[in-house]
Length: 102
Image (cartoon, rainbow, N blue to C red; front, side):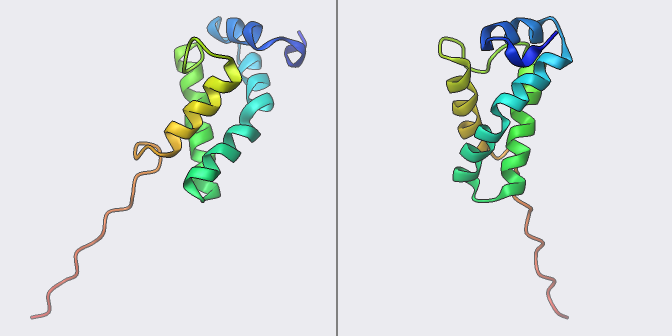
């Protein structure tokens, strides 16, 4: 089945049925845009990539768009922005306290 020609709504239906090719098609369609949104927030390409990975992992786990009631594209971009500002996706490395000299 040529998933890349399906509508967003049809892709979501196939993702809900656990069809990995549908998720791949959705990723191909929107990952670049989600990365750009995340990059605007994080200013770091690696962190933006982590946001995209987390975003599509959540879509797969939930089997639906992250924000119902809006277009899939808007839902994904809004979620990318929220995730990019979230500590859970790119936690700060804790500072190691300086050792006191004896």
